[in-house]
Length: 253
Image (cartoon, rainbow, N blue to C red; front, top):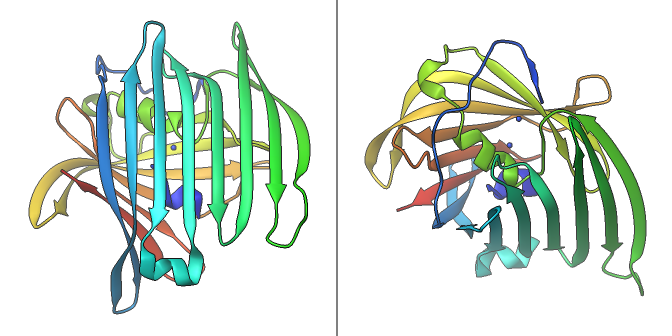
């Protein structure tokens, strides 16, 4: 669920087709989103999210905060936080996910080290269920070759891609580390599209995120994203599937 809610939805040096990095430079920003739950005729705001980016001397730091609305707390109370520290190219050096979901606590910490094209991840995974007296702690070591991101830094990397020189159907795949495994994150560019935000149409680049692991086996449903065509490259809308219905993250200007 957190992959769909936190933008909060999401890049390896292996190409299906060549994609170049544009000259987009992101600056300090705070982006707000409303989270909509949609199932049949049900279309109701279920939560909110905020993503903050700060430029530092050596790169960037970012944090994403998501929470369910009071009415949704009765069914699935959620208070999630993601934090990442990134270099100038948006490759992360430190990532944390802290989750309070449905009475369960989780905390993932990934420390990235870079040696040429080799990226290592020292992962700590902490979990505690509703009725468990104490948390369990597991440690994992991950290794990848080429560009490697976490769940939050992937969205900033996405925003620097040179969409103007892409053709619909162009793909790019990179590594992504979670708290327990390495996955392959593939972006598929669908072309230009119009998306309605608060009753107003916006021109956008449409992109689909696909997560695969264990020999290209999909590890979650694809996420669709619409990115603004202006210099800010703001993610305007994301859609992710749930077991029942779907969740939509809509940018609030």
